[in-house]
Length: 287
Image (cartoon, rainbow, N blue to C red; front, side, top):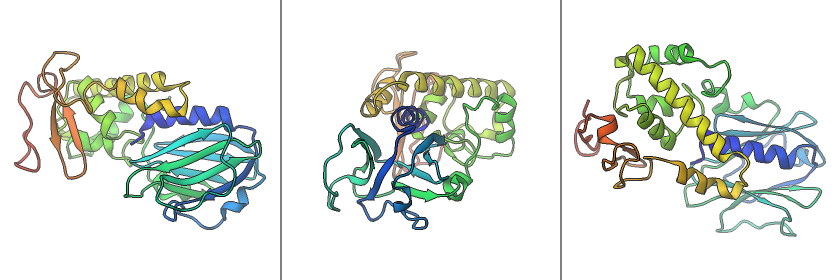
């Protein structure tokens, strides 16, 4: 799933390629992709793109008449830019194409989604706050005004494992499964650590690890073409998706805990005092 760094890089990319250009057509191909119907997508025809923004993992394309084309790529969605779009109207089928946005110059982008579980979501609204997923977002962890004390205040009333807290979009916007693993590894903290048990020093270390991990990932991704972002993300990860490989910090073997629809990766030496974590499917959690 694209997370904050990749979505921010896509925002930069689209800002460079869309700003000041005119939309010719927006064509939904998959029935499931469009979540709003008023205003219709035809309202975008002939309008100029004036801004591209990011809200957590959502991208927001604003036009001169105040409409916002908002989309969330979900787990298996992606954006493919094309300097020359195929001619003709795309037809619904079994392929990954979900929506096409064509510019009057002949270029544009496709939104695609792999797999059979269709969660990619597109909204056309007058205000991005009309999208429920945006309305409930917590603060952006890379916002200039988001400091250590703001982070501590968010965690003060939490009573759960830190891995789940970091992934909760209503608490902090933009962090998903991969970067929560990376942040916790950088902070040398167990994913099962309870937020209520965090000391002041641990909160400081976690905040600094979060900001550094995300900032470095954005820096690596910025300026890359949309098609190269996935490989950049994978190459930059230190523990997530690297089960069985040596930890780049201590050399211990990276371990995994599997869930029904996801998994987490961690280093026992760096994060859990050398003790492997129990698999939630088989036994109770280790503290």
